[in-house]
Image (cartoon, one colour):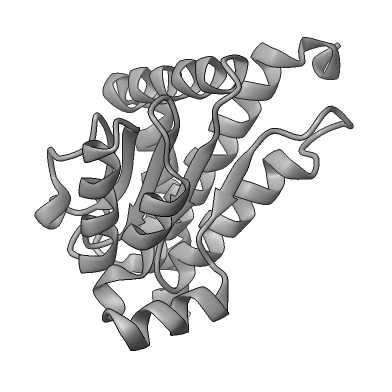
Length: 193
């Protein structure tokens, strides 16, 4: 039971850090500004990750295309999680290309790409982010620990100083929810009166 209590304490420590760290707060505000500008100009957001991070990417997308707090018009966010695409591209080009092919197909200048990797070393997320930069997309990365190979590559970066992927993913989901709320508060203030 002591180990479980430690898990609660570690989650609380990371959450408290996010609530008090000026860099992560400024980065969050900038991410909200970028997404608001993207949607206002009629552009879209593309997001991807592996495993639990793929689930976070899908969750983030549906918060925009469905609803978050209250009804409002849907906003264009697409997660790269189509199993037929993933297995086709993995079979024909290799697993490292599954996301970059989608970026190449759907990404346009003015769009935003968000890559999620708890290690920062996911080759398919790295290749997708690099393809997004070449195609003129604004890039955001949600990373953990030291940021891995993706450290410093994105236009905007969140790096969670936790030791395990589960704690990093929990923090990523908190950040993604706060970003959704920030966008909604900016573009649909009537949902918060």
